[in-house]
Amino acid sequence: MNTRKSYEVDLLSSQLDGKELSFHEDDAFFGEIGGLVDRGDIDTTVTCKCSGASYRFTICSEGTLIVPCDRCLADLELRIDTSDELVVRLGEEYSDDGDCVVVPESTGVIDLSQFIYEFIALSIPITCTHEPGKCEYTMMQELSKHQAARSSHEGDEDNDSQDAEPTDERWAALKELINKQKQ
Image (cartoon, rainbow, N blue to C red; front, side, top):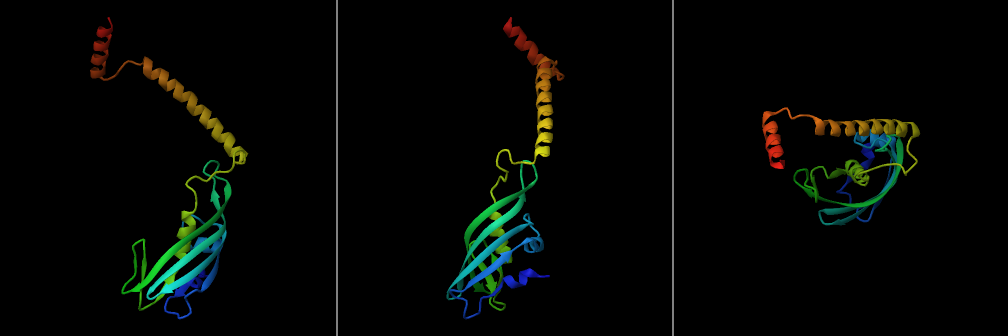
């Protein structure tokens, strides 16, 4: 089922100025977009202001996303609340240079689904983790075991590297010079 069709907005419509559009993004929406986020429950309101051949869309999204915890990989419910603007104008051919999206006047239709998805994805913090003590217990136990094993090996490697003789003859010559200076 193509849920993205409902996100298409006719820019040539005379009733677009001041119009408020409402959308709901759920697992089907995120699955169809196929990005990093694949689960969520978001409500989005889009308000349009027109001035000639230019359109300013204010896109406000609020709800929850389900993302993996960066620490334990279990599902993490992440609350988001974002408000962004998208400037669109009519032109000869499609262009998205970052500041303004140009839509061909011949079609006059813009699909807002990808822009809404990107604004939602950009609202996700760089690090997503459960509150302290809320991570999945078994995963944290496994991480703890591996972390302890790694730190004990790192200590062994430091001791070995200090006692080991240099294998490169240049290092051996340098070590010999240092030893002569010490005497």
